[in-house]
Length: 482
Image 1: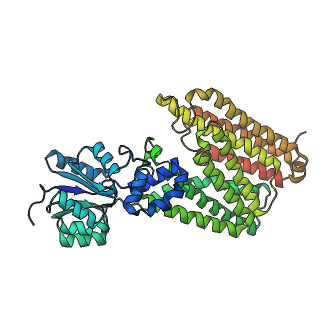
Image 2: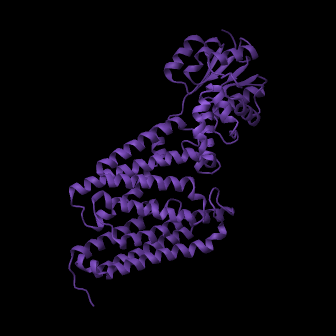
Image 3: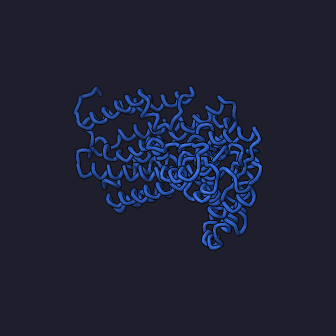
C-alpha cells in the first residue's frame, strides 16, 4: 500500500492518547462539587449523548495538565510533528475537553470533537475525518468502535487494543505503530483495594481477646466473617475515595502514582469492583448478625462523611479517625455478642486519638523538611506542630492512665488471676507509644501508624510482650510483693 509515513496522523483521545475516560472524570468531578447534579442526570441523558456531554462540559472542565497521557504515543506524535507531519485530534469527547488538551500539548493542527447535536464516534467520526482531513490518513485508536475508521485508513496505530480487535485491523490495513496495553494485573488491583490496610480491621478481634473467648469456634468463625466484611467495605470506600480525589492525587508526588490517578486502571472498572466489594461485604455482614450489619453501615456512613467533609477541618478529622478505630472494636463486640467495657472504649478513644495525631504530625514533619508550610486539602500548617505534638503525647498518656485505673477496678480484680501483672502491659504501652512519637519526630513515620506498628520489628515485639503479659495476668496465679 506504499509509504504512509507522511500522511496526516489522526489520533483518538480517550483510551488512546490518554488512558482515562474524560467524560467519566468530568462526571465524577461534577458530582464532587455539586452532588445535587445527580438529580439532573436522567434529564440530561434524554438529550442524547452529545446533549449529555454539553450539559456536563458546561459545568466542569478537565485540567489537561493533570490527566495522564500514553507517554510512548505522545513521544511519537511529538517526533512526527517536529518533522512536519500533520497531526489531528479526533475524539468523541466534548470539544471543550479536546480544545483544552490541544492547547496544553501544542501538537495538533486540527481538532475534531463532539459538538451540539453531533456525537463524534464511529461512522460520525469517520465522516468528519474524511471531510476535514481527506481520504488518505493514518488513524490511532484503541477500541472496537474504531473499526470502521481503521477500515478506511491507509495505516493504523494500535494503542492498548484487544487481540481480537487487533487481528481484524491487521487483516485490512498495515500497522504503523503498536503500543500494547499495560497490564493491570492482580498486583495493581491489590494496590487499588489497599489490601495492606486490612490490618486495621484486626481491631475487630480485640473484644474476642479481652473476653478470652478465642477458643470458641463459633465466635471465632463469626469474627473471621466480620473481618472480611469490614475489609471489603473498606476497599470499596478506598476505591471511591481515590476516584473522588483524582484531581488532588495527581498534584501529590506519591499519590499521583495510584492506579486510578495514573490511569493504570479504568474508572468504570473501579466503580464496578467497588460495587461488587460493597455488596459482598454487606452480604457477609448479614450472615454474622443484623446488629453487625448495622454497625458496618454506620462505619460506611462515618467514613464517607470523613472522606467527603470532615477531613478538610483541623482537629475534627483526627477526632473522627479515633472514632472510626473505636467503631471497629464496637463492631467486634456486636459480632460475637458480648458487652463492650466502658474501660475499653475510653482507653481506645485516647489511644487512637494519639495515633491519629501521630499521622498528622508525621505529615507536617515531612512538609517542614521539604520547606513547605501547609498541607494540601487539609487545614493543617507546620506551625500547628507546637499544639498537635503535646496534644498527641497527652492523649497517649491519658490512655495509660485509663489503663491504670482499669487495673484497679473491681471487675478486673475479679476476672484476672494476677491483675498486678497488667502493670507490665502499662509499661509496654508507655514504651510503645513513646517509640512511635520518637519515630515521628525523626521523620521516620512514613505509613499509617497502625500499619507501621505491624511492619516495625520493635513495635511487633512490644505488642507481643504486652499480649503475653495480659494472658499471664489472666491465667497465672503469681504471688507478687505487696
